[in-house]
Length: 256
Image (cartoon, rainbow, N blue to C red; front, side, top):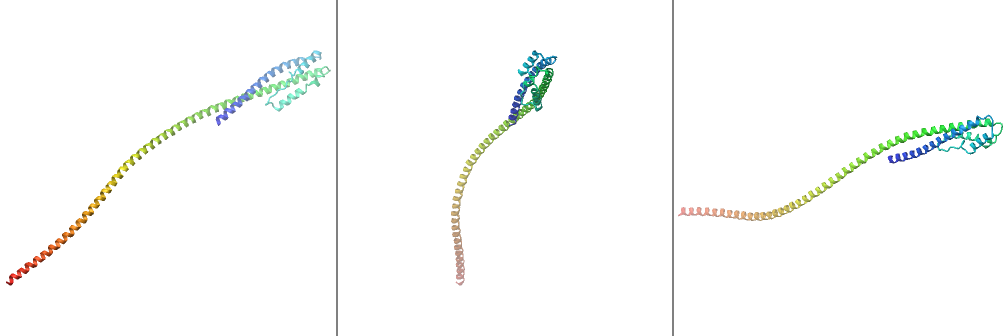
């Protein structure tokens, strides 16, 4: 936006500068024309008497509009307009009618003076226009320098943006690779987990079977232990009976 604004401002100043240069050329031509007209009016004013030739020269000079041709510009100052208007209004046709009168010599002097005033005004305006052209040239140069700096800043910013975009792209690619690697690890983990889960289930089934077998053996051992206990009890009973038999035998022997 800043570069666009600078470009528009530079284009506007260039257009205005072109208009001022055109105006300056017009004013320079105007100065040359006024200088020539002033020379003619000076010759006319130097005449001691007013002759028909003099009247015709002044009439042609005024009627042709070359002596008091209006100057149009947007930058004209009000006081320059006032000066030109006073110079032009002083020498219109009502005054021209008195050229043949006794005041012809005074009229010619006024003509020269008024043309000199208009010449000075045109010179002043030309000077102002030239000064403005110089100022606009300086402003334009400064704006062009700012535009160059802004373009350089924009190029640097675009370069940083491209670098950032490349970094973001590389980061996204790394993220994609990392995501693919994570998916691969996850798939591998799921495969291993499934295998281990199946193995654990097999071990659980085997353990349950062994528990059943162990319970069966424990029941069988309990039965055997019960049988052994009963067998030992029977043996103890038999030994007791055997001892009693021996004692009875001894008693019988003693009684005999």
